Length: 485
Image 1 (spheres, rainbow, N blue to C red):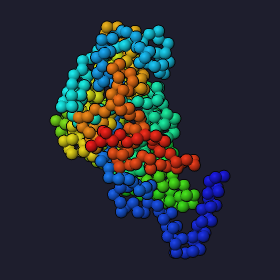
Image 2 (cartoon, rainbow, N blue to C red):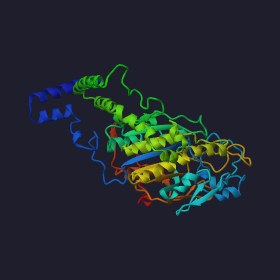
Image 3 (cartoon, rainbow, N blue to C red):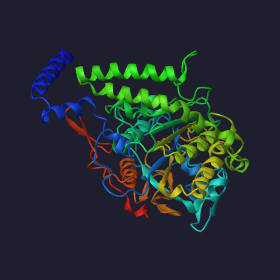
Image 4 (cartoon, rainbow, N blue to C red):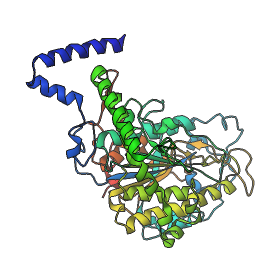
């Protein structure tokens, strides 16, 4: 009934405009029939017509290296010698303060403290603490801005990851990449504005899955959903022409389909029809741009060696980091990498060492590769997971083995390039590594700061849906100016 009502309303409007001929009504009708006609005059391909950015951005693009599962900050970056001294002793109630626990450790009779089995040292002029299992990252600490006071509310994976990616623990909201696509538009008409790459870690290869809604468009136009690039022979599904169809035949077919779609849009006024037209055209252009982007064979040997041997194995984190740099070169606006396997509840020492080896060299290589090409200055790199890990052992603590449960109250992330301070550490945790002691930074604060670096005021960037104006940061969040250059 709703579509039928729209049909009659559109008919009445068209009849009126037809009667007034080529006056103001005629011009309005022309704009309705071809809402994308003004795009050719703009380099920023944004069909929403939003007046963004709000101010001069420091970053043109984002590469978000999401470490799914919750990396242990205490075994990577947040050195706590007190935990070594108190190893095996119970977590004091005065530190825990009755905070929420997961169902996996709430039934434990004790909470034995455990420091890291790995050695820590300070590196660079910034004297940042880094674990021995991250030797390549240790070499680039003066390019990094560490945030050691991240905190969140969600204590389980799905709501925690959803919160980081969409600003809400409940599914259905647009992801951060979709918001950026919607607000800022494309920098390259031949590649998706929001691109997604997935890899599975060797530390815990059968860990929690990821869902496509994490890079979904939510209530925004489907034009802004993330496009997943896969490691098989078809990087983007349904992109190739059917067997026996030539390029010219494909073009002719699309022209006829677009003509029908334009008639349907004029008839019903459904904005998703225009989105479908744009997606068909993007897919046509991607038939040549995607193979070129994915062709890492043309990379010189010294670049391959920089990223590591895994860079030539499709679907690995190293290969995806190299592809992220190639996408950044081609001005993809938002590049999202997900690396699974950081959920070390048991057997943490052996698992996290493998997991760190997956990402250490390639992450450092990506940052230095961007820098040597002059891209780091306007590319914001973000590294981190959905929460941290506990300072006590989950399960039995031995001299050589331990596990760690989820811990949302404090954890570490880092950023690089794109207007953040290099060689800088923001925030502190207490000596037990259990609570934030200085300069807390919430998930919404991180999102607000990322948008600020992209030239967007998060409080003014909204979309009206079902009678309410939504934004990525909901009703909170503030820009953390202390980490900005």
